[in-house]
Image (cartoon, rainbow, N blue to C red; front, side, top):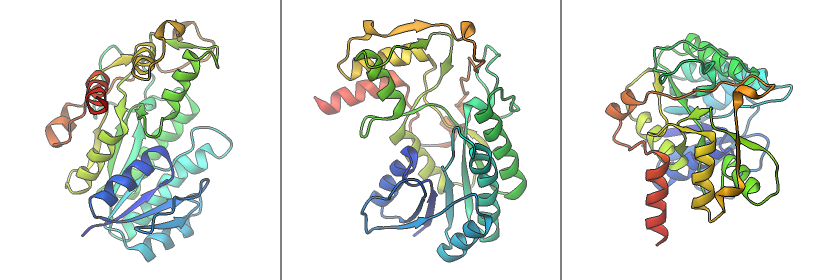
Length: 286
């Protein structure tokens, strides 16, 4: 039985991974830092600051994991670089030292979004935001520190149980709690959190190494995505207004579509598009 160590176990993806791995009967350890872990006796929880290389190394020495899935990150704030970039390096070094397979979570926002076609695994990062720069640096640090690492580039992660931040933002717009716009010229490939968790756990059993795009099978604008989320949650989509990222004062990557053909051929887990997911969810509820 594999020993699995998930960093960021109380984050949105981390919780889904812990839940799915536990259901599969795997031996799961997970780290937490900002949030208290759930009361789950089947999981070994470890308070861990990934900014501390010695603490990360000690954690891996004690847990002796077969696989480390690194999901912990910071998206903004003064410790963005220390957590997202340097923290990834610490985890990679520790995983390499204890002989563990490493799956590192990266992002589609490592690109500038200026091309018209989907990005492949061969495309080099060209970040234009602080978060994108930290994620791009994390990829470099991981590749330098762990010779067998898998670097997974993914997109917007969404789910309804519990509701993710993106979906909650859309519902707040539809409910009149926020007065903002969703861009119709920003494109992503959103992925259902359960699909991503299943794909990562399958990948943990695989010998693939290097970069792999794992995202949803449908490219949508942020506005299109918001309309679908509002409708799926019983909200009036006409209350959501659209805008253009090109007209924003803040530079943002626009087309972050990921080419997932390699992952689709490699994995059994279906990487469903948003409409397919929402149709399946409706059938399950009915």
